[in-house]
Length: 464
Image (cartoon, rainbow, N blue to C red; front, side):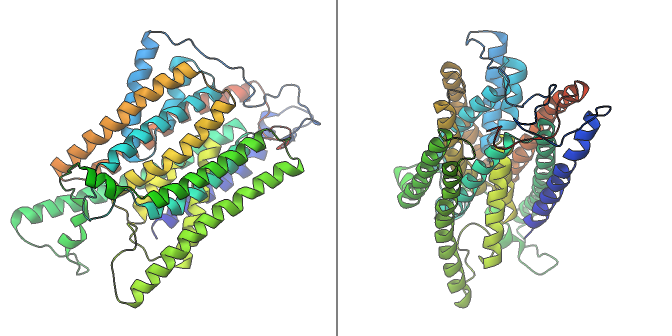
């Protein structure tokens, strides 16, 4: 599976970054008698600053050039982000902090509101769109049910880790993740563009080109050519899978209840760890059910000589591949929760790597992102982490952007016959996020080094 190279890159780079914390912390304390690797309530550092302890900064919602610029950036970021299936949080957070003036934690909370609004309107649009190649829903519910529990489990782990990871380390992880996934997506988009060009030439010349390995090119690339979209109530009915949606909602409710109870529990107490551990059987039960279904159906088809895919992924659902998907789901969720970006920055490229066509990858990733982002929004609302007027306004902007962005891009891909445009947008949004969040993070990290602020890990329990 081509995605294994990306996962190995992420795991290796993340491990090296975590190990480097010790050396960076020693450098920032050069000249001091002690350079502790971990700070806790019982080991206070006078000149340390606990990340996340900054005061709330909530600008007043009023008409100004800052609001106009934020609206434009929010609209464009939501439109492009939802089309690519990544949301756009990497653009929203720097925009809200640098332009509007919110503190980092409030900006992250409002960013989730914008992602939820854009993804919800995109899902509504996708329910009205037929699959470009087959008589099935454009949202792959099998893949959504496979990845969503692991993503939500990873997000809760990542959020817990984020409170004691040093700020500069999170910045480094953001750059590693975004550069890796954007590069991988861009290369795939280039390959798809070349294939589409060859196919369009073959269709023009009325000939069938054959690949060097002997496969019929016209058959291989047929899914890349979008078909004309027709909206009807019948299409909406076919695109809805009430049973799968109800299961996802139950998982969402379970995670929300567990998180809400945990937030009112003393950190590192017995009940705190019990609530954390209860999330594992919930996620594994749903994941195991979907794994069993995919594995049995895939094995049955292979034994019968049926080469038709079980779902949109162009892989055989073996035990190894299913375990790899579980790893990717947890990794994507953990990174998303840790970096505040959501799991879309890994899920979108991952779906493309396992053979899902761009239109379905975008629709499925956006559908999954609706659940994860809404879970974060509810938690932030209960914690009173963002101003309601600003949240509602920017969410409204994102709702419009998500719908019209999907509509415009789908029309363009249909007219041009190039689904690779969606993948180019995916790569562009991730790369832009790497630049914006990397710039903000590096600037703040340099200031922390100059001020000799604490650069190591905070104690987990005292920082919760």
